[in-house]
Length: 167
Image (spheres, rainbow, N blue to C red):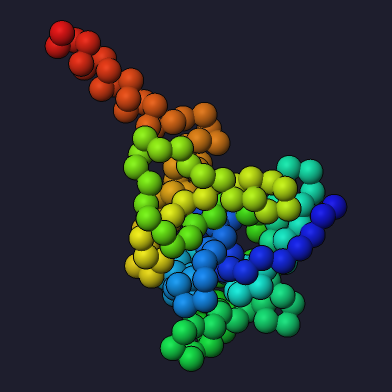
C-alpha cells in the first residue's frame, strides 16, 4: 500500500470524494466551507494524507487538525462545533479533483490528475469560491459516468440524428 500527502481540501459530496487543489490563496478552503454549508462532509484541510490500495485512493485529514478548516480571513472553523459532528468524515475516497483554471469546452477531453500513480478526473473552475453548485454538478456527472452514461455522447448523438433528419 502506497501513501503520501497532497495539498488541498477533501470534501465528500454525495458519496464522491472531491479533492480541491490549487495554490495558496486560490479559495480552496472557501469552496470547502460552501460545500459543508450545503450539507456535504469535511474530511481534511491543507494537508491530506492519501493511501493507495490497488485502484482505490483514500484520503484523511491530519489527526491533530481533523475538524478544523482555516480560512484566508484569519478565521479557523471547527466544523464539528459549527455544523455538527455528522458533517465530519475520518476518511473518504478521492474520486475527482477540482482546481482553479480555465474551463474546458464540453468537446475537450477531461484531463487526469495523478495521485500515487492513479489517475482521477481533473476539472478546472474559473474561480473556486462560489463554485459549490458546479462541484455538485460535476459529482452528479461522475455518478452518471460510473453508471455508464455519457451526457456529451448522448447530446452529440441527438444532434447528429436531428441533423440527419433535416437533410
